[in-house]
Amino acid sequence: MNEQLQQGHTREAFYRRDRRSVALARDFTRETLTSWSVTDRLHDVLLCVSELATNAILHGVPPGRGFAVHLSLHPDGVLRIEVHDSGTTELRKVRTPYRQLDAEEGRGLMLVAVLSDKWGVGERSPGTVVWCEFALR
Image (tube, rainbow, N blue to C red):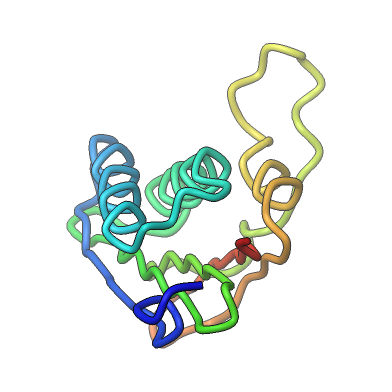
């Protein structure tokens, strides 16, 4: 791992409650990781950011509010993604997808759980933080 990454990095961005913010959060993540020379597991990371941002918009951000994406690259090579919003933790658990195979809901956190090495939900004041981690090479 190069000298720059051994020191660790952190970046964050704030987004409005708008479906277009999911793509903006994904672009922010891609640009940040590229600037940190991180390409390992990039597609999995971007999918998880999309899912967490979508969940924030659908379940955690009241009208007129927004959500924040925090990215941290730790010296041990672990990338941590956190999405902070002002919602409650009630809806932030892996659910069994609806019975219909073509249902559009119910798979987001299941994907995060499968693709990341660790994930979880915590409380903040006010709101919730949903996070996931990736061990990078």
